[in-house]
Image 1 (cartoon, rainbow, N blue to C red):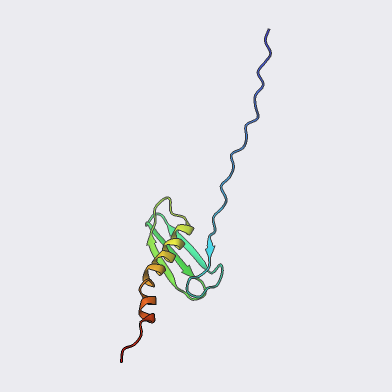
Image 2 (tube, rainbow, N blue to C red; image 1 turned 180 degrees about the vertical axis):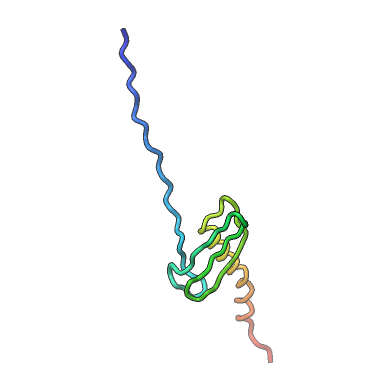
Length: 94
């Protein structure tokens, strides 16, 4: 007669770290002032600052997280400010 096979203990799956839901405002700089609202039924996502009332809206899908909305807002700010630094550094003629 053979020996019974023993079962190895099954390791519990590791949980992914939680992502932030409150962020620093790119305009006023207050930490934890920007909150995100995602309405999946309407496909709408909005990030807004509680201090300076600046906001950004974009489309949302089932995979959209608050950090995605905030990073899109930061990318839009960088794109908007891309040519501004060049205009300020130009010397005046005359």
